[in-house]
Length: 342
View 1 (cartoon, rainbow, N blue to C red):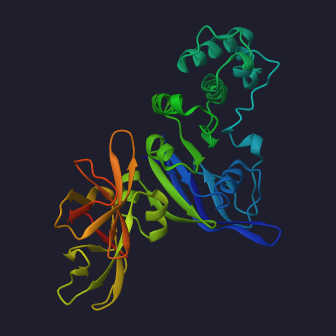
View 2 (view 1 turned 180 degrees about the horizontal axis):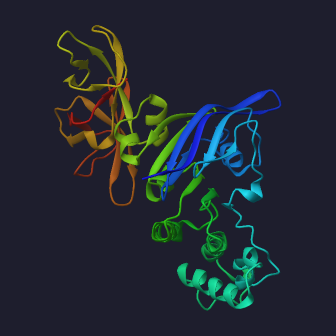
């Protein structure tokens, strides 16, 4: 698979403040990549730099092996063949759906433009909506119009800034799955920004977790979730808690729940303290009068319950196959498969 977008040692500054620092990223043809991180981490800044809306302080950026910015050579945004989709859709309110989709095709003959527009509306399942105006559509329908408009002129790269944030929760999951299928069918190369790990997991082929202008880790969702390179990545992707431990001479980890095996993510010398990352599904609890651990909280999650337990002053997230009440004593079993030590 060939590389579509290549970024090497990119640095961007606002006045004297460095927003992106020595950042590198490779995106393959037809790949959907998510920039994931908290507000202010540099996600949107990177999107703007790729689009040509912000100058680079240093670094090199190429699209389909053509340099688009290296400090000395800069390709204007309108010449990069990059499409952008915003969270507010940016549709023209005075134009119909057909006119919005065909806006970037005005250089084509009328018959060819009309045929292309109809193809795009069929692609996003909006055939028959061409004569409507944006205010007559739902949020999900407006987003599909924005995507049809962007795909109509076959961009080399599509950038999406929080594309699903204004969509009702009830329809967001279905829309994400639908748009992903469209992108894959069309071979679209895309980069999208979100702060939602659920959106990233559902939509992206790869994820770049960003923190203070750098990419902490880049890879598939399963790689980042099961093999986080740092506590920051583990915490951002959520769903875990930490159990204090000490590494013994056998290379095992002594904890309040017994001696456990774990994979070291950083070098931990014998005798040193560390933390073991435990996912809730690895901490299994059963009610027992002989238990030494207490349930502090019960969180109803719809299809299951998640529990917070107190292990000698340390709070851990846990799961159970049976309903357990707050304050109840439990015994704990640890599934050691995939435990990570930091």
